[in-house]
Image: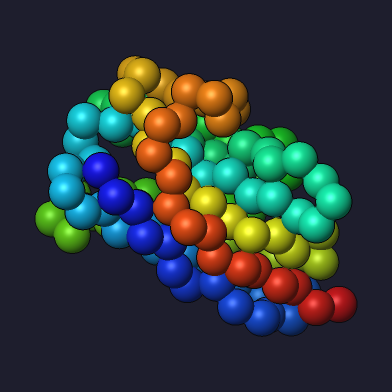
Length: 123
């Protein structure tokens, strides 16, 4: 499966962005999906994800209450709605797909990665 992330940009603190991750080649339904991010000089970190059946959704503490992951099966696209953005959310955001039932926060379980989209939050 090929993944294409988009929707990043520059936004002021308190603003919102919606990232998209479009899949091609195969449907999302066979994969657990995760969103990760990597800020300059920092390790890649898990943001949110759902299990292969999309019945279970998980969020990093930093994302709880502000970010929402969702999936549109008809469009074969996964979304990350980000509200109340903070400067510390600035990073390159990646979507990833795992053949495991649930990839969780371990990036090593994700075999397929999108190219990343830059999110910059100004104070």
